[in-house]
Length: 187
Image (cartoon, rainbow, N blue to C red; front, side, top):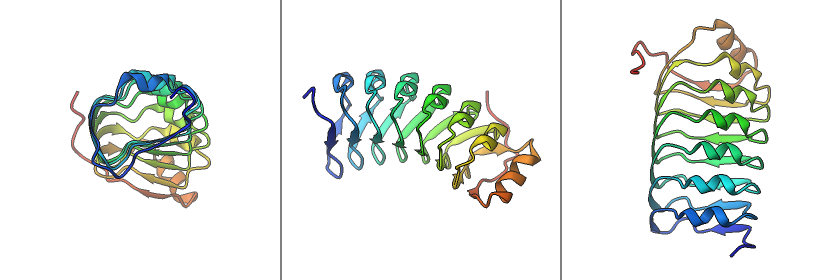
């Protein structure tokens, strides 16, 4: 299947783990495996899919950390990984995805801080990180996201140390939702 560019297997009852061999599908542009019962971790080899534009793996039972290799997906525009069981910190390498417009990682168990590198995603329009266990300051680098239309950060343990960030969000009429928490980050 080395010439495959479109894989659409969503809304089934597929289960098991995603094989490392998926990374051999070099021409893959659209990868739709959402609304299934896949479990286990994301293969590091997904970072080899340099032509990938759409990565839809939401509504599964995937777990573990996101591989740093996701930052190699230079053509990626849409990531939907919400409603899984991912944990650990968000990789700084996500900031390498310069074409990214839609990043949806909500309803997982991510922890740690929001990477400053997300402020480099100049084309980003939608950022959904709500319903995780993220903590610390919301990075001021998000003010670089001039195309941002919607930002959801609620149900985390986030704070704002930069009042200019709140003013920026309000001034740009960005639909945003976040709840300041007095719960400290657990290191």
